[in-house]
Length: 154
Length: 426
Figure 1: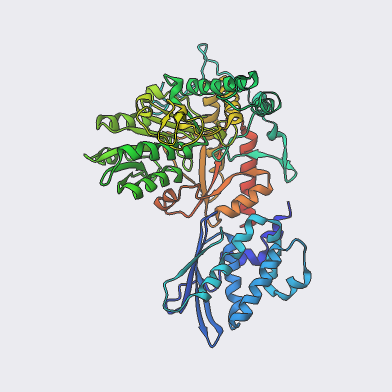
Figure 2: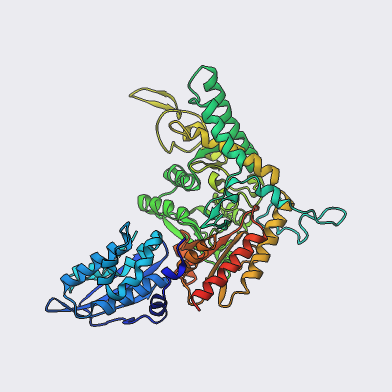
């Protein structure tokens, strides 16, 4: 097994213990619930989009260190990005976690999110790291006046 | 004897001369080939026995032998190989009867596992006996497999579920149970031993109360069957189910026990070969119990493996094994309490095998990953018991579950692993 420190890097532990943008956003215009049934992770992602850009993003809920840190870093990364940019980042992030070979270039282009590269060695934890992102996608696809959408990484 | 209501004496296994016999754990461990394998280069401490048991060599050999030298379909051929396979299959039924102390081998139906057994009863018994406005009683600590089949029945019929509450220790509230009965109560289905909390429920009392209201009872014995001696006649339950893979046997095989007078009045569960007496396009006559409930070619190899497993358990089970399991549980709970911030979930006065726990500030999933790196296999999550987690207001737990082939070294490895978890999350 790979060194656990590859998985539980300091940045990840820091964000898991003190998640950023960890709050309910009452005036969000998009929101969705994510549920990882395997381990019981449940989180809600809140989003405000203005002129095609992420104006504000936050999350709330319960989860393991990987899912919480991933959600926290996601919210930091996405502020000010366009919806298309957010989608692109998710695709590269997903590839980082699931591609059979390491790709240093891809990792570098992801900035802080590259700390999740270690998750690749722990396939059952990929769902934890991607839960917030799948939930974000559902939130973006949701019409502003519709009830919260729900996704599951099962 | 009933393990359900009578707690074993504190000196279980004591010999008349007062000396406590030593349970030969090392000899037993040598029967299980998988226990010598390595996990991430470390000794395997398999502590996920509530999910599935490991298999002794005799079970693996029995299944191999069947496929190598006995394989034929049953209840069909007149040739000797088929007769031999039929004989081996029906001998498995007798072994299951013996294991459960049932009166008659016709009361033993082979199914895929406990889940299918419950579905069979909900479907075949429910179809004839449960209607709109009727009540079915379950408990707050049921596995999803003893909830969903009844919900499906309720959806089909318009019946309702009533739930026996439990206290914070994970014990059923028996006063509340008795009050759930009404004129429309038609069935009770309760777990014998909780897979998420380890609680041993007072099932004999549960059956007695239900019968005083004229209501039949099914017991889910998936967790109980290899930890406690099961005597369905003493329990007086009307149905009992357990899974082969949780009793040292193969996956895909399980047993439904039903009292003959119930089974004989139940319609088939599935149609097909082997469950009929005669078929024309106008009319089919069904086979007698138990074959009426075993449509199609059954899991013959599974039955043969299960037979070997039940024989094996019969040889190792007894007061010494129970004492070993209880001692190990006490040792584990005591050692785990050393970990700061650790809380054991499920503290029933009568519990076995299962230690569900949470660690302050560390999610069970992270505990599971780190323990895996230390060679320790535990389950993390909701254990197919989401209502239990909701009741206790926790999203998930980590769960170490013990078997008779576990030893103190396994527990010590778990405790060392927990120290590692605390280091990482310090």
